[in-house]
Image 1: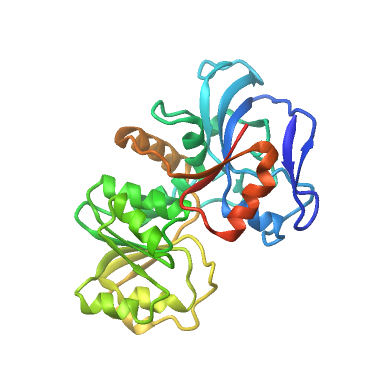
Image 2: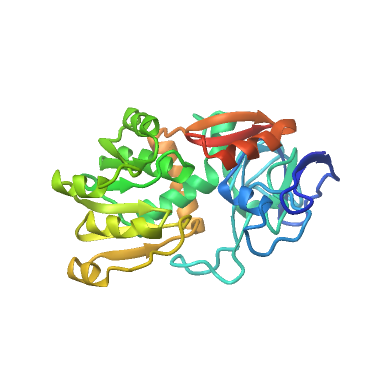
Length: 330
């Protein structure tokens, strides 16, 4: 079969590799589409722990069951499925266990014509989704669901600020929040992305490259019950300033590093909650898929590439020009 291979640091190619074989409790899936995450780019750039080259990356995928390792009443050849990329979460719903991993490293991932995964990782493909949309759902959709609902406990009528709109997780958070009737605001370095977010239901947005954007927001009387962030860095203090008393700040990344100063006085006086989150539990996965089906949510697909053009998909991810998920079709 053909598969994307990262044979060494900052190298990528599409190569012919052996077909995987499912063992007991596993299933072989012929993939119809897969999607990229920033994690895949970090693996290519050597910025992810535990890399042993060569790597077949890819955490997101959807396809058709081609073979099952042993008999099961739940799944059959020909079933259309999406894959939960959150492996071996552990017993606690509150935090992942020591054996937790993400599909695509160390296990061979979805940027290939076929992949083998445990049966427990499957969900039926929501009928309203195309193959590219289904492939775009798992990692970012799961991360956003846990952040917005399991951790931040966002409720209808609350006001939420989503930083860095355009990325997959932020867009899912936008769609989820709009679906339950929250008031959504966004930030971006691109006025065009802010405008597109408004088309998707956001109330408004702020260009964080403009000096004093947070101060202007405060002067206009805006404050937020929930803030979802993945940047951190020096801008984190501005997010704290934008919190209403009792607000929750949930973050799933730190692309700009750690804040130079954590404003402890403001945090305790306003009784804020700082909530870290990573991926999601099996319960989060089941609830997310059901939520997407109930509200007929369709993932935003930015660009599509053939498997043979996967290196170009990685280039686009590195440039950061996408609005939504980058999908590779088989």
